[in-house]
Length: 82
Image 1 (cartoon, one colour):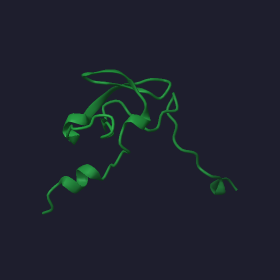
Image 2 (cartoon, helix red, strand yellow):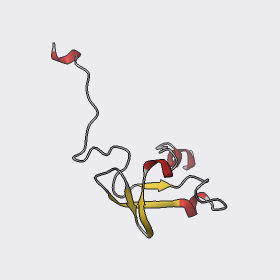
Image 3 (cartoon, helix red, strand yellow):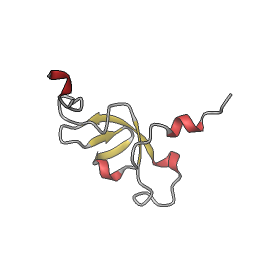
Image 4 (cartoon, helix red, strand yellow):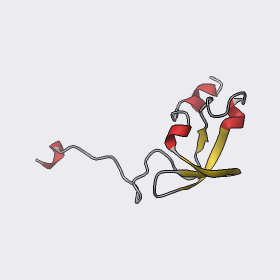
């Protein structure tokens, strides 16, 4: 039966699932020592077909391993509770 088949992850045209244009990423602290999180956070300008990203206002192409793991709940936890 078809409803018992495993579903595959949604794939983009180039197979990148870790990054999207416009999302914020934070460099690992080991790569930029002495800088606060806000100084290490950049917005993705473009995702390359090979999985690397180009950042706004920062030179070069960067791979997923250069960034902290994505935590979608981080911003939610910072919001004040009513």
